[in-house]
Length: 259
Image (cartoon, rainbow, N blue to C red; front, side, top):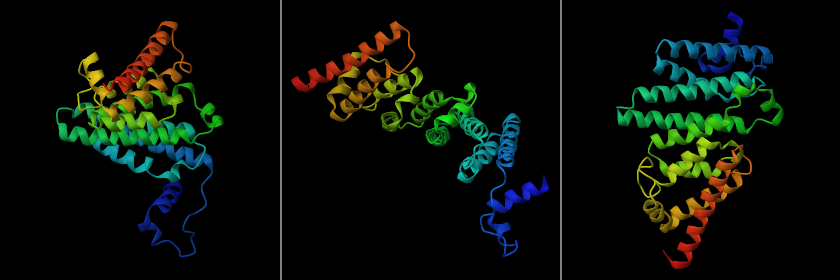
């Protein structure tokens, strides 16, 4: 255990690199995968212990330090990697709920939560089919991650960023919750609070704005494609298809009539 800890310190700490033998390679040979997985499990357990004791600042700082180290993810420890990325991201949301009454601090935390979920999705997007299949069903949480991504951005008051992220994300990562978050954000395209009632008036004002209209059109086209991929009840599918077609029809009418 002491040797393993020392090996890791040699790997990531410049201060120790400065005092070890000059004959030691700058990047020592990677330890066996089993050791790397065990190290990730130890990291995850330490993060959980800090969180369980209510030390959210310490836990988040500790978690961020490790998930930013890409060298820890250059192995096949997919379950450990997913668990660490997921739990660090969820801890941001839990801490955000605790400080929600402090708007400035909450916004900073929401921005970090967004970055954390973005990192999770970027990691997942690099997995091949075999790696994804190796994860237990309960750890294939990409659609939930996509929903949390959008909600984190909304809470950081960056509505345009929500639209951009969802327009670029793989359609396979979008679940019902993410689709709903996307639509809510569209109603805030002109600066309205996305939680305000979704009236036809606000929607029409959005569609009359060229930039917002483009966002609505991309959403509607994605929605129609998504209904053929997502597991929906016939009633849910019919409603989503109707919604997408209605948006496109309203856009055509506004384009023809000029508003």
